Length: 402
Image 1 (cartoon, rainbow, N blue to C red):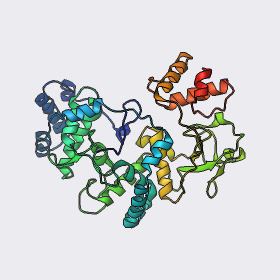
Image 2 (cartoon, rainbow, N blue to C red):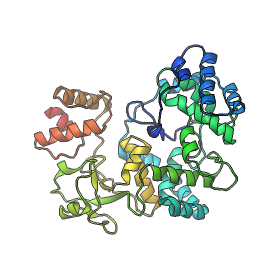
Image 3 (cartoon, rainbow, N blue to C red):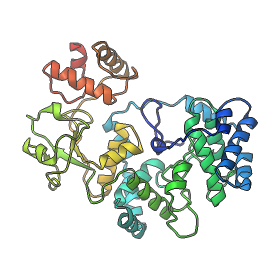
Image 4 (cartoon, rainbow, N blue to C red):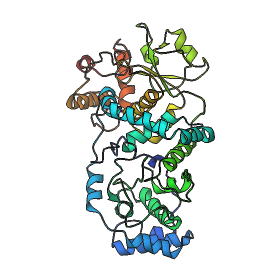
């Protein structure tokens, strides 16, 4: 079962989708952007590919393999929303198996990880954590035909502007010999390989790590490691800086200062009594946000500027915090102190809370039961108004007071 990513159209972007660059449509693209007769649609794609200089052989081979995949449409329509808490998701995703396999792969491909850090500044544990979360180090990559998945989603009129360029990029991969249109498989949304990249990003950031003349993210660990490092650097990684660190907190902390914003420094937090749970804190001048995924009674972290890269990879706060935490574990950190934050609100109670917050004028987005950024901010504002610790974690007491 393909479980490497949990996607929601409201909350999560598929990995790498956030940086897709969609240009102005060509005349052929404008004529048949989506829907209608599938053959006519593919003819429009072929014309657009020709206008971009793709060779006829690659165009024909790619589009001849394209079929409408109803299972892809079913998956797209049935995307679940991400409602797990940080403790629930991180305990499941940062498993003993993944930690063991991650450590083994860091040893097995040590020279490639060293090269990746030397050339792109991205530490091995950061790459290995994404590799493990996305596909269990290549073990679970998805079994949907990639060309058909992309053609199906490009033809469908929900998000053609997102997937049509990916279908064109797949043609370029076929041209380079890096994709077999009939045999290459991956995720239902068209991502390929061990770190689940979309074709445009493979074309742009792919690295031939093993020197065989191809970028093969399905079968080559060196290609996977080097390509992921190059992409992560592109997303804004700052070499030589940390990304996440577990901390201990004083009971007197001004909780309203917590949250995912970088208007304080490590030195500012230290003055307020924040301490590293292990070792020491980094440079006092480094910007730092204080994250409380489950409020002041749960795990606490300082997130540094490199944490923003995780949010570029995947928009879910819970996924990104878990991925960053996973990388710290692979880097030698011990398991977090889970604390005793409680289970939070049920789905029904969370929707009730969001409705009450919206009625008070807060922008919480869709009433979906998800503790997203808007809901956390609204919760913090109401906690401050009511004289409660403003840690952004919703409780039954807050709901009752509202």
